[in-house]
Length: 201
Ligand SMILES: [Zn+2]
Image: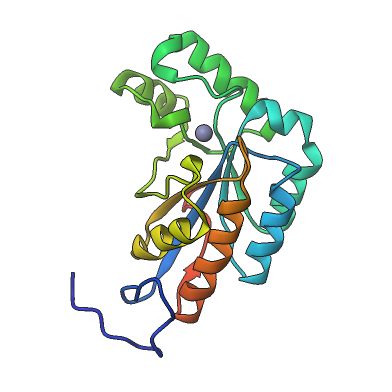
């Protein structure tokens, strides 16, 4: 990597990002009425667009939230129906999980396996069905509730052009994630970063 040359006034803590580019924020396990609407407002304030890997069961329960995500310029991927580990349920069950979720979401092009749990044969089957399998480059571990400052620090420290950042808008109390994202986007946007959905999703 080339040495970072600051092109803008130094941002506040936690860290000085490398030369800016496009970052891809991803939010898993929603949509959730407790967190997704507030997250959409935060992303909107920072003019950030992201990709949401949604659960089919939750999407079917909250079609209004699915529509809200899309209406704000974000894209949606398939994160299975009920979040099983794909490596434990057999290929037929994997196909069923993905197909039921496709039906709820309108067959998005991208899929992210729950827990990132995957084998070469499962990946092959998903790709043979036309799906683009999307993992991540930076795991903020927001699911472990490390506190908003730690989540913000991991986003900023992990910023590299084109990097995919793993976050969550469902599955637990996500107040730390929302505060951490708000803080990190302020720092990164001031340094010139932009935030787009995962390419192809
Ligand atoms: Zn998940």
